[in-house]
Length: 92
Image 1 (cartoon, rainbow, N blue to C red):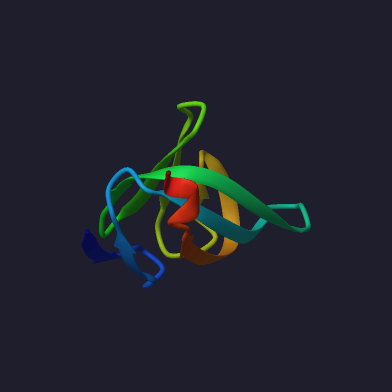
Image 2: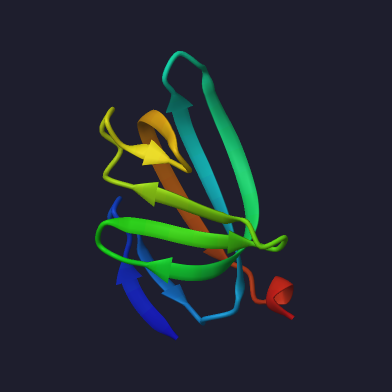
């Protein structure tokens, strides 16, 4: 178990290898807000980036704090709100 804070200030307590649900509510430049729920394995969390690996092995990465110049998985974003829920049942 480790605790860290992602770029948006969300405190995480994740056991490495556990499955988590990560919900992203964000606005892509020129698009409307969309909710994405990604079933993913905790991969790496740092002060400048949040990276997770989905079950199919895809790496998704967020850089920055939600300002317009920041990116989510390579696409420019206007705002990001991140909610992380650890699901122990799904970790099995």
